[in-house]
Length: 612
Image (cartoon, rainbow, N blue to C red; front, top):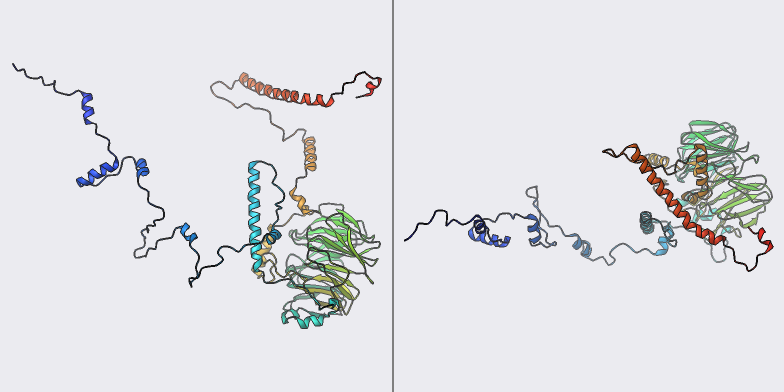
């Protein structure tokens, strides 16, 4: 007998139904194959990150041109950077460069422009400081290589006058030199006959393009001596003792009989500084914008021309000051005195930085070369001496002149000119870094009057001479630097370029307090002065502001900032500091005992009580 099955018996349980519904896992390529076989489009994979890893990578060197947004624009595939660098550079003709890459630079040429000494090892400091030093050294190395490579572009080279076998160059006259040189160089030699208002003092502008001169009887004029174009000409109706250009050819200062006056390039009087009276000599410091004046009353005054204020007025206590020059390297003023000494001054000090005994009689003239290494002096004892300013100011060489030199001047390349009565002698050294040799003169020239002023023209082989008969421009081969820095001193700059240069120079003005004998000392730390200032500050304030502040616990929430908990935390920190101090003292105690340990003696002596 057959029985009918119940309706719910053949139904599978829930767990079995779930197992039958679960599909077998398929990979994305299997799914793609089945869908494409069925004619359906493959959908995007669910797991994008996993799909990206399993997707076959396209080689990097295949370039697919991008679609241009501008219709009709042709598309050219770009070459990869690696292939572009590896391909040899070819010209339009198709020839390959036989010397690819930058030109090699020798180590000797790069060393001339290097400022960091590689022989000194870097200090063992923190990693961050050491990395900064290494970066600075790498940048300095790169800059020196670039400067050495750009030196190849300098067209001019320095040269000197060379005679034939056994010929003395001092016997060569200016007329012979003018005949031998080209027309442009021959035009630089000229004479201005101005006997009516002489004797004259003269000065060239910092770029070497303009000339200013002033006569003792009041004649003042400035001109472009290259084109012989007169800029201004006035008569101040009183004695002119000295004249100097300021930071540019647009302003110049005149030391007149009574006060100091400043004029522009049109001869208009702009300022009259009455605090600088009875001025005898002028010097201008271009990087500090300071005009230094020496007066009959014995005062050395520094005037800041950028703000119109007197920075310092120093009493030299040596009588009348009529011998003065500047050191171009460190901006220190050198004063010559009647007792045979030369004193070195800075506006930051009321006393001289150094005093050098140079001559037995009074000092007549002082000059310092452009590197600040050598100083030339002449005195009433008819001695001409060369001193080394780097060490103990010892004389290197000396020469006795028949009449004595009343005026001295150094050129940019180290030539020394001396004016003796109506004769000018020029001495030359072995190189730019060597002192001039006083054995044999390089050139000699005789004037129509007594010499009253000497000045070498920057970037031109010309020596300007002011004498009682007027002005003379003398050709001196090899005196100046043949190449100039167009960003610093450009003789061909326009008015707009000059104005921009003035703004930049004012922004980079060096304070007067930084003038010292050794400018490299500014980069060092004066530990003694720092400790002394710290002690004075503690005494003045009554406490040490740099001391460690006492511990202050931070407030906490949920009742943990009660007074008792704060005191407890403070006491915990104090106890920890006390334990550290005790531990440190215990560690140092055995070392002290070892130092004070006495050697054991077999028998005590009566003299032991005198031993401490």
